[in-house]
Length: 252
Length: 354
Ligand SMILES: Cc1ncc(C[n+]2csc(CCOP(=O)(O)OP(=O)(O)O)c2C)c(N)n1
Ligand code: SF4
Ligand SMILES: [Mg+2]
Image 1 (tube, helix red, strand yellow):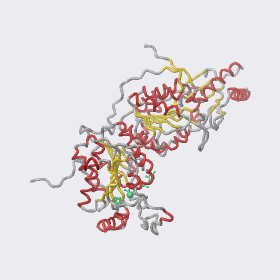
Image 2 (cartoon, protein in one colour):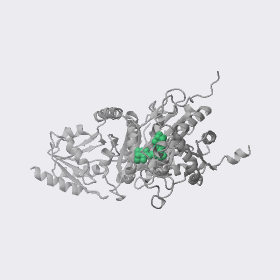
Image 3 (spheres, chains in turn purple, green):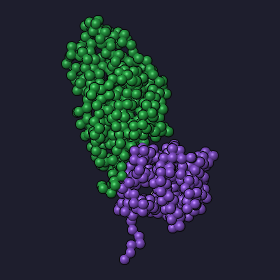
Image 4 (cartoon, protein in one colour):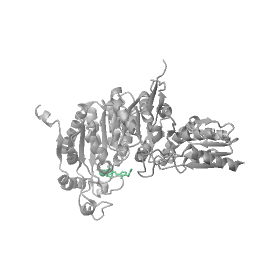
């Protein structure tokens, strides 16, 4: 009998603490599939953020470090500069990466730090109970925008891929989604490309994954995916914002 | 082979000694008066197989330190007072992760932006509150260019031995002044770090560096385990220098730059018939309580001299259990007390004793 579906080796055999329908789990799995396929579990160091994925150190079988809130790109820099031949990835939420850790993110990109960031944009602070995130959409109701995000007072959402595409050290900035099997496949390809860029020592790569937080959005998992398609994707369009390998690849 | 004596600035001697001690990564952000350390590292690390990286902030620098320490290499950062405040978050995480690293504070006057002249007003921050939570770091207090070099080597070794951050609490005067220095012999054997997150190579279970414990019992167990380690450090690592204390009525005490002026004052006071001595803590955490206890039977008074309005004095009082009166003399803002000012204070105390 052939096995058609199994847990990746680099994924720990434990139940995660994520809520039903949360997309954190899908993204974990994609990363682990890539780590398995590239055969790099023993050479990979993952950095988890402060946020819902803070305990991801228990879900990945590679070596793991838990960073202070927002500082994962700096921690990753310290690891990578010490071990330039290892793979180093961070896994960060939108509050972590695009609010408290904005400086660390942009400067890791500016240095062309040869690391990969997997960025989970769920338009909210999931872990702390659904406050406004730097990515919360205009009008979106959260615990700290109970009347909806009023851009006059609370400002506009931050579009990180668009910003990071302007930075010379960025090798790859791509926004993906995991709301359908087709998008999951695109997301997986993007993550693979990011790790390949790291293997080739080409610089900073970030894959932003539009994600759901059914719990704090107050929706069922299915409704959440619908909201993601109807509201999030139009504001945060999917696609490749920068890919320095695109040209080489098109010449293949 | 006789070791060579070279004339160097304190900051540069410290940086050179750090590289000799096997420091592989340096991360920092510019600030006066630690400038020479970063400049020396920028010039020398790339030539000697190390990494120098100017970070976007002290926050980023200390987190790069966290990363490099996790990877198992010897790593250092340096800053001055306002920058150390920004590093506090990272220092707490590094301590909670049981990671070794070396942090240099070339103190300047505070609070706030303060000034750029020497001060000792970060004593509390260094020994009591360098970040949130129940933790300690080792704090060394050099008072010469030679000790800037010696203590940074010791800091790396002790940091590795106990898996604890170690700080050199220096100041602008020690950093900038030039003196001859002989670099210490350094063992080229680096300790094994089986806990490091450097890629398990499919040879061991994955290592995790983490500071989160959501179950109260687990957090308590982790804090208590670290506390046990601190007990060992308190037992083994106290260190102080005694100068003319055996028959001293008044024991002057001060660390770092202040202790140099105190020593001069003690010599002058002796010429004037005042039986003064000097007790100089070389390590500030753990505070050398055992050494202070030694002067309790003979000292009639203690004069604590600091480049602050009085911070270490609390620990001096505790160390002698308030069984000897402790007086204070301090200058701050970047001003140094003169030996004459201290002698005047000693004469006043001496008069009150008779
Ligand atoms: C310095 C600091 N400030 C605030 C917090 C509280 N905190 C924990 S998680 C979090 C937000 C996480 O949101 P995000 O990064 O979007 O991740 P998500 O939970 O949505 O996956 C905050 C503010 C903290 N732990 N540390
Ligand atoms: S709170 Fe939201 S982001 Fe966090 S696990 Fe639950 S659904 Fe996922
Ligand atoms: Mg979020």
